[in-house]
Image 1 (tube, rainbow over the protein chains, first blue to last red):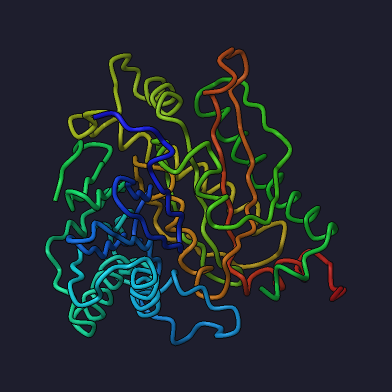
Image 2: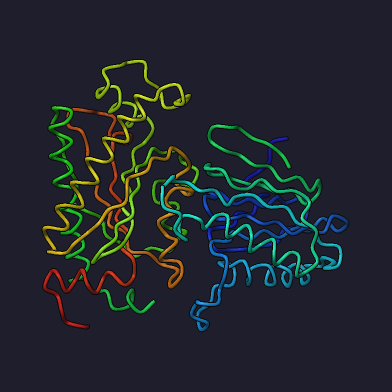
Length: 166
Length: 213
């Protein structure tokens, strides 16, 4: 079914947002960043965060952008979901991203940022007791993802490998 | 945010000169490589939010061919050479003298990809060496790496270092163009230089701007 663009909420880099069915939520051009979706299946509410970095501990606390870091984005997203009427106790998660866009010989922290983002998000999900239903992470390809709170399907589009749903 | 707030018009002019010198040498190198005349535009230097940068080429999903390297040494940052798929194919066809080359299904065309990688090596290398000469600083590039993918996914890699301290980037964008080609919108190669925050002070000092206003 073709949808009107107004029904799709777009989430930018280092940003997060929440939607209710029948709207969809989308973020584009994930590289080493990870798109994590938390959703309440019963109430058809979902939140999506486009996370850039694993850890906010070294960040300037005065102007902290909570959506940028795994350890602050997940709690912030949960708060927004609760405000929108989601049941926190029944939240589930899906995620995609965390690629390594460029191949280098040295394994510096910057290069490994994708896998580190994935690990940090998983830690947060365990901490918050949110089950991770499915994931499509790693590799060396960019991803655009779109989530439908009604079907709870996460659509993942890549340049060379087409579209898949998890 | 500190370094962003202290950027003046004078600083922007200096950064334009950085883009000018860097891309100028690359344009010369490219011109010799493919034996055609190459033009370049006045560099565009802007302070942009990450989201503005993701949309810089018209959308974060635009598929591009890019060569990326990290700069280390006195000044650090990220340098990208970005082409549209059509333009990359045009260059590669000329380099390997094969009219059938296509970047889609590129796994079967190792020679073409290798040629594009080499093109990127030469152009980013000449950009950096002229930057190093201009500033009198020591710059050590990483081995350039190739990616053909969504622009947002590629360019966000250059934001990782910045993102630890800021939500804004200073982009130095210089376009080189092949002359005698009429599809003006598609035939562009961009150099994107994204210096790390701590590099601006060194860059400005090296170029003789010391006032702290």
